[in-house]
Length: 232
Image 1 (cartoon, one colour):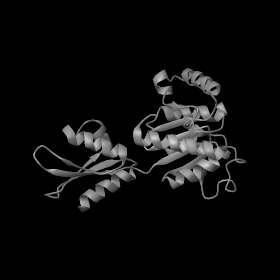
Image 2: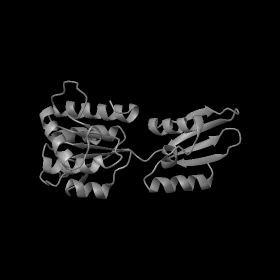
Image 3: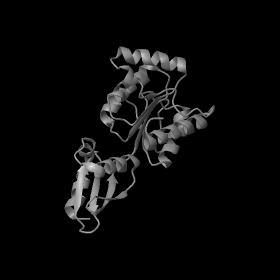
């Protein structure tokens, strides 16, 4: 990889963005496209489609153009990030599972009796109110957010911020009745039906989960499905 290419990729990563690197396998020519350029359709034809797919799947591909040139298209995505609102029992199970899956995990909860190092050893904890915490943490398209508190004072501000962001996965724990009330409150905050439909609620795949560990597993499975296949 050329030094100029490496420097540009490092700059993009430092800014929290993603990119694709397109390398001509015969000449060695390198071209870098930021994710915004890919999304905007800057790259035309089949190569543009492949670039979008590579970013989504996080997996490199080789493509042959009409003129016979073979191009290697590699993704340089920002790290996966999970923000958990609510330092509850399910969070204690979800955090290590997500870490194993490659996520950088932050737990947000202003209740210090819940969010402490004894219950979450080695985990990044933020004791600000969720809307303030999310403004500082930032949310990009590689971010997942899950609310677990059942408390509208904590969950709703987080969901409000998340729905105005490009987060790829937004989920909230609670029964269907709880979620229906949540939908009404978020509507009152100005979110339309299409925006609210981004929320996976109740959170997790329906696998009959009962225990905190099982619920955490169902949430992680759903999060993975959305990341790799789009909305489930």
